[in-house]
Image 1: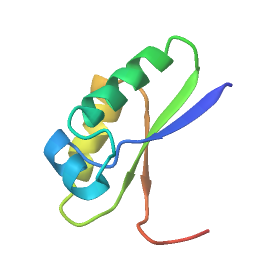
Image 2: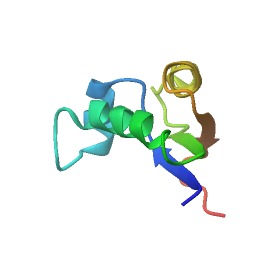
Image 3: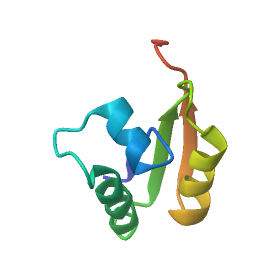
Length: 82
């Protein structure tokens, strides 16, 4: 595997739980970020994706991806196929 795309979707845990409803519940958002940090040791090309949903701080998500996690950022259009 030489590339990985991870859906981060929001800028914080509370909003992630509200929008994504993960089965694993609280702590999922932090676990995703930790996974990305560890994956960087093995996978050279990692990007974080975020949907352009109302209420999501896109710029903060970009900062988390690029500055905190050190990976690429990609914004995806919500409900647009293709």
